[in-house]
Length: 345
Ligand code: CUA
Image 1 (spheres, rainbow, N blue to C red):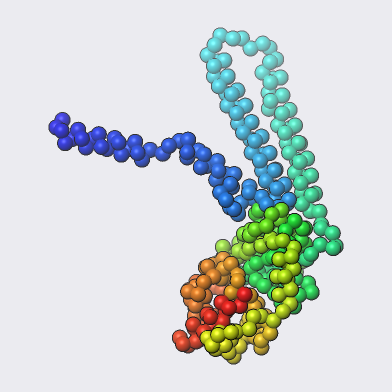
Image 2: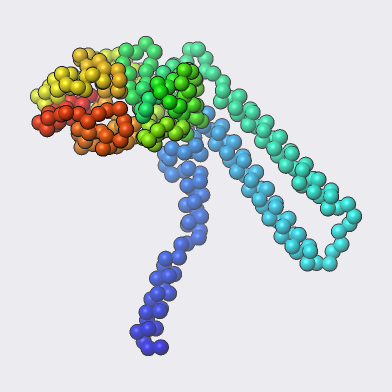
């Protein structure tokens, strides 16, 4: 072997060594992923509410039981292999007793215990919050969430504000097909069934934003039917709710004024409401606070000027199949419309 070939093969060995995944960090990363510990991951294993905590508790109970059973079976298997090789006699009746205890008795005890714990958690999750609890009315549409608060004249979309630490009743309806309301960090799923009003509740133990998702396939844009639950201290929540009764922010700049005119006199007003203006459409989301929302199109794209412009001009390229047709907007009007809508906070 000449010197070049020797160098090449030694380099190849080094490269292979570098590429080989390190088992310990990979296993740790896997465990962290499993535990949903990556910051504010919207995972049912990273609970922030009492409902989700019960689900996570049940999950971990089942997980550790499975681990214990797996370890026990592997130990017995190893023992049996070693045992078979040795010259130890099995006494008469011993295998039958063993099968009865380990194969039937132990699983029976485990299953009954898990069933009992499951029933207890199911009862706790089904506990209706008292009549005094704050109520939020959520309606599922293809493919967005309409959110109303009894007593408030306005509505919002794809975001649910709640006071932190309080049980909030959520009344669920669907306007069309089957959807499912799920906030993994706060509460398990509740299906929305046509013609029925269903109830669940949310309680966030700490302030923050918790992503929710439609969890029942409902058409091509099912994946883009997300929402955000925003838990905030009571005073902040009350101030937010008060704004839901007030007219939307008035335009202050020239561009915003022109944008408002274009919005109210154009096709937008036929489907959308902006409180305090002649735009009172109820087909699409209320846009009175659209500038402050976390996304456009129920999680389809970020809420910034560029994506908003693209959405107004032709939302079908962003979220194909949604109910908003391409808009006949003059190029000169688009920056004004963007300026106006972004000012609505
Ligand atoms: Cu709505 Cu899936």
